[in-house]
Image 1 (cartoon, helix red, strand yellow):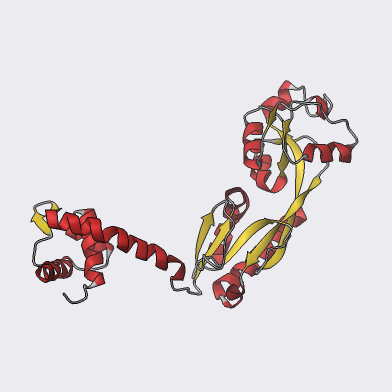
Image 2 (tube, rainbow, N blue to C red):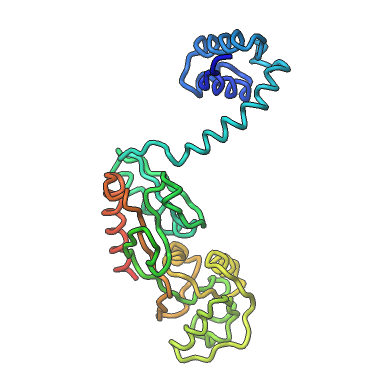
Length: 294
């Protein structure tokens, strides 16, 4: 038998999975008649029917079911393999960021970028995983937290971050007010990095002997503080919206610089990407303005 037409097989898989030629044709920007013609040609080529036309769609014949089971996974694998090699366009930009940075800092500002550059389609990948630019060719840039030392990429500083004790209004009321009791007497939410030790060294107070709970990420700290469980030594950037809205209250005018800073990271290929260059200029301006408020 001569080589099978991959496009017809792909269209068959889509139609078989949807069970409806009209919806399948619409999903592939085809007319129903064109899709029907392709299916008939495929059936003639194979020598047996694949789809039974019914009043409300199509049903697979036993041969069609076997073909779907044999061909479908392979076509899915081909699609996944080609995903990183999708054509890149200057008007399509993909940026990766950790979820907390994306939701608390980037997304609230993103409307300004969209308004300034309506011709650019921006895709935001919110993930905890570190982007591998050599394998994830569709990603143009990332917002990372660290020391700025990542091999094979350009890392440009955006801004430092700062820590401050913060608590819910309910806990502040329960403790009699912000200045009623020494901070070491409040229920504190501990962290495995020893940031509270650095804080009490900064303020000259004595650190407590125990914490009400130990939490290993900033989102959990902020969530527990919101629920009134204890005081979080929270990151100002990630908790800024909560502080501005009054859902959390800063308990001290002091600030403690975090060990890591925020960076814009990108591979060499992005240096000629017009969409990225526009985003880089915009995000640098946003970072400068944010740093000025800190």
